[in-house]
Length: 242
Ligand code: C5P
Image (spheres, rainbow, N blue to C red):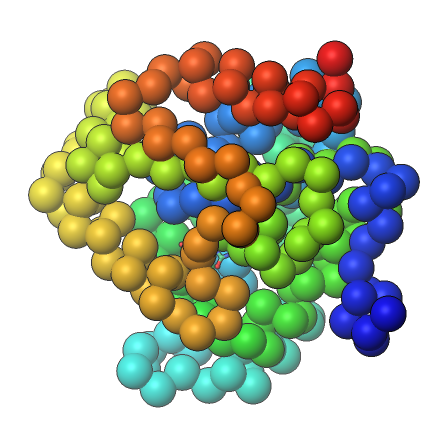
């Protein structure tokens, strides 16, 4: 066993389900529902990068976007004590950072952009690795992100790569904003989605991609219910639920 193998969580003890894919493909919804259904913890790994991105922005560390200081970002990441806790609100988990409850601002598109800026750095990713892997040592886990099945939990019991066209993802986001009474500019949203996809897929460390053994699902023309049913059936086929 190599040194890096020995750092992997023992997935034989608790099952791990990984759901990777680009933003807006519906990962969060299906991951939350599966975690509720199976009584597993939920790891929203995007929230970790969003928090680091938001704090980095607040500290002025993202100002020189073409020349960011990886060591300063690593030090910031290591200084954050991040926990997830079950939320009263349907469809989400609460995020606590240094004893402070993080609000919804972490979920907006601007912070998604900050997250993808800091996520390119190997030292930032490394600083978040143990926190993510440790979650699988305590109970079953549904992990949602970009590199769950490829890097963080390569031995996971179930791996799914959930994608959708950029157009379909932008339409969903527009609807979501309109339903919550907010202004939505589809062209701007689509451009943001495409820019984030490129940065996440082209980075050299842990790029967003499907694991070789992942089930591929394109949700462009599927309802959330249909996606959930397909993944649940796949988990049943893999023998981790009935
Ligand atoms: O999934 P979410 O949109 O919240 O992720 C925000 C950003 O965090 C992504 O665009 C990506 O750059 C980064 N991320 C990542 N690896 C993960 C999860 C998110 O690099 N496992």
